[in-house]
Amino acid sequence: MGLDRSKVRKINDGEESYRGDVQRLLADARAVFIEWADNALKEASGQVDGLAGPEFAAARDAIFGVFHDVKGAGGGVGLDLMSDIGASGCDFLRELDAPSRKAAKVVKAHIVTAQGVLAAGIDGDGGAAGQALAEKLRGYTLDS
Image (cartoon, rainbow, N blue to C red; front, top):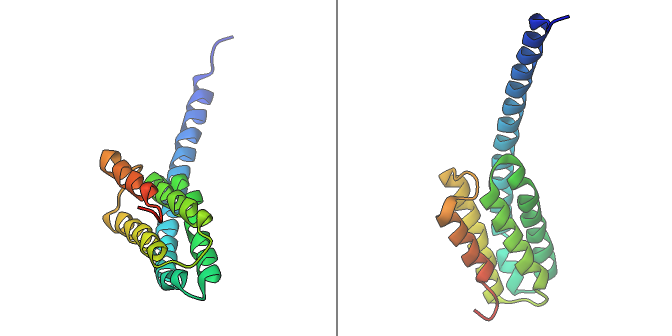
């Protein structure tokens, strides 16, 4: 009883079809994420000034939500640098407990950086330059 090559071929054809379907699905998810992130970052940018005034808590929570979603979804669609930027923004905002102009500037830097990454079409972790950029963002504090 030998190996039935016709069945092996059918399995391989099915796997190739499945891989193609998965690749198309991931490409679609990536495009949706990029469009969503672009819009969400624009909205977050409009809330940055609230971090320095009486709208502090609402602005912090809204911007944190955007960064959290960018962090969570970016890596899933091959945009690890976006995920790193979102994580850094979350970490910074998590520690923020009072209105501050400096905080608004740091958050704005995160938003502008993320928008730049999207506009440039940077994939993955952005290589050495992308990781240096993420490290710079992580280094921002209210004291720096």
